[in-house]
Image (cartoon, rainbow, N blue to C red; front, side, top):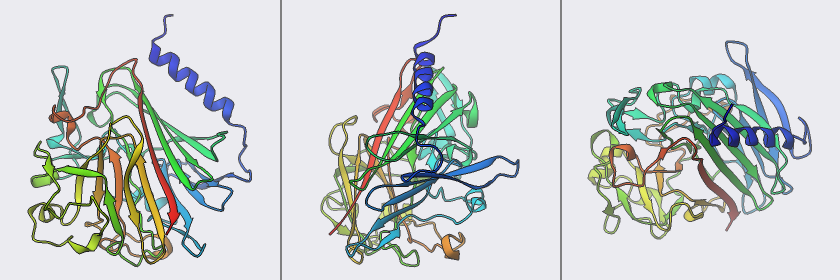
Length: 379
C-alpha cells in the first residue's frame, strides 16, 4: 500500500518518541506520577521536570496542561509562578484555560465560520456568538498521551493527541505533538508539530497565567511589560479584529518600552473598554518563522524576569480581566481579577476570515511547526 508523506512522517515521529523513552518513570530529572483519574476511569499522569539548577515544571496529560512552574527570585527563593489547581477536578471544571494547550485554533473566530478552498465550515459557538480556543471540547479538555524524551537540552516530555475529522467542526484528522523541555539556562522550550489528512486550519497556543511574585493573592498590575511590536489588531464587539493594523504609538497599548501594566489599564480608551483591560493581539516585529525575543515581563518585588521568544507573528496579552474570584485555585486561593496574565504566542485572531493576515492553513504533506521559549532570570 502506498503511504502518504504525512503518514510516513508520523510513523517516524512515533518511532523516534518510543525509542527516546529511556529515562524511565522515575529519574533524577523526570518523575512520573498519577495526578488523578477521570470519571471514566482513565488515569491522568503528571510529569515533573527538574533541571540541574533546581527549577521544576509539572505538566499533566489532561489538556497537556502546565500545572506548576517554580523558578528562583533574586534571593534564590524558588516559587511557583503559574496559576492553576491542586487537583484534577479543578482542571476538569475549569473555564479559564489555566495552563492548557488550546486549539485547534487559539483565540477567536468570528461567528464560528470560515471558508477554506471554497467550502464553508461551522465551528462550535462557545463565546457569545463566536468560537474561542477550539470550542467546548478543545485541546484543553481532552486526554493527551505523554512520553518522556531523552533530550540533551534537558528533561523533556512530549504530549500527543489525535483530533478527529469534524471535531468541534474542524475538517481533517490532525495529529499534534507538543514537547516541553526544561533547560539548565532556566528556559521552558515549547515545540509543536502537527499534520493533517485534509486541508484545515491549525493555531495552537499555551495558555498559562503568570504571576511572577509567586503570591497569587497579589495582582500583576505592578509587573512591567515590554512587547516588541509597533502595531496591534484593534477589535470590535466580541473582541473580534476589525481587520486593520493600528499603530500603538499614542495609545495605552504602547509597550515598546517597559511599562507598568497598571499604569494605563483603566484609561478611558475604547479598546480597553471592549477588553475590560488588555485582551489584544500585538503584531510582532521580525520575521514569522524565526525565533526572536518578542516580550519581557518583570516583577520588581521578586526580581523575576521572564523573556518570551517565539517564531509566531502575534502575541496575545491578556491581563486576567475576567477572573472574578469564582475559581478556587492552589491552596484554596480565589483567583481575583488580574491576579495572573497570559502571553500567548500565536497567529492573529480570526485569521481565516482576514486574508490579509498571515495565514494558518495546513495541508496534507505539510508539517505545522512552532517554537516558543519562556526564559527566566532575575534582575
